[in-house]
Image 1 (cartoon, rainbow, N blue to C red):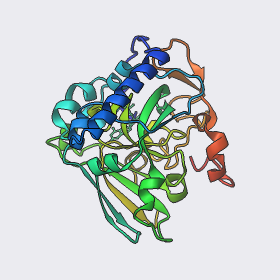
Image 2 (cartoon, rainbow, N blue to C red):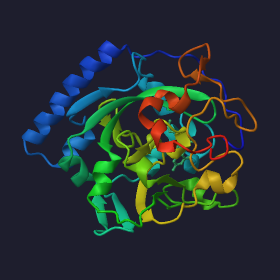
Image 3 (cartoon, helix red, strand yellow):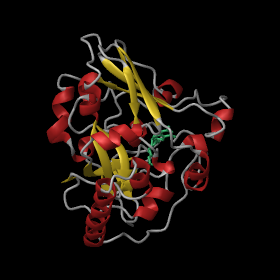
Length: 312
Ligand code: MTE
C-alpha cells in the first residue's frame, strides 16, 4: 500500500458458482455429521465448517477463485509481496489454542475462545465484495458471525464510543514484526461503535466453507465490506471498547492517505492514484468502483451530516 506497486497477476480460473455451491453443501453436511458424531471441535475444524445460512451480498457477481483469494494477499507481518503470506503464514502461525481478550468500557470483560465461539454459533456464509485501497477487488464467500452478536455479550457501556482491534504480536510467528522501523506493530484497527454494531460488520472464521487459511487472517478476522480492505484486521487477539477514537496502524503511518473511516469512495482519490475504478482479480477490464462498495443503501445513514471528503 505505502511502499510498493503490486505486480500484475494473470487472470485466473474462477470456480463456477454452481460447482462451488454444490461442493459447499456436501462439505457442510460432512461437518454436521462430524459434530453429530460427538467428535471434538478440532476434528471438525480440520475440515469443513457447518453453514447455518447463506446471504448473497454481491448481487450476481461470481466469487473469486479460491486460488486467488488465498494466494494474492496483504498480510505485512509476512512480507510485502502478494504471494509471501501463502508461502510462510501456514507454517508459522499457530492457530490453537487461540483466544481474543475483550476489555475496556463494558460490563462483562472476558475472553473469547475460538473453538467455543465456533461451537456456540450458527455460522453464516456471506458472499461480499472486498475492495482494497490499492484499487483491486475480489468477491469472497466468508463464513462467520455478525460482529454485533459477539460484542453484545460483553455489554458495552455508554462510554464505549469506539471499538479497537489488535492483531497478535509475536515475531516468532510473524517474522516481519522483528523490525519496527516502519510499522508500529501490532497491526491495529478501529470502528465507531455504531459501525461495529451494524449488521454488515462481520467476524470471519472461514471462507469457501472451510476454516480461514492462515494467510487470510486465521483464525478470526474482521470483514467490513463497505470499507477499504485494510480495515479488515487479521488474526485478532484483542478487542477493546474505548471512549476516544483509537490509533490505527495505517492512519498513524500516513493520515493523509489512509483515513480512520476509509469508506470505499470513488470520488475521493488516494493522493497517489484514482479510486474511481478497480481491477477485479481474475478479470481483465477495470470496472467502476461503487460508493460504499455497493452497500450504500444499508450504511450511508451512518454518515449523514459528515463531509466524507474531509472525514475520509
Ligand atoms: N491485517 C493484518 N494484521 N496485517 C495486514 O497486513 N492487511 C490488510 C487487511 N488486514 C493486513 C491486515 C489489507 S491492506 C487488506 S487489503 C486485507 O487485509 C487483505 O485481506 P486478504 O489478504 O484476505 O485479501
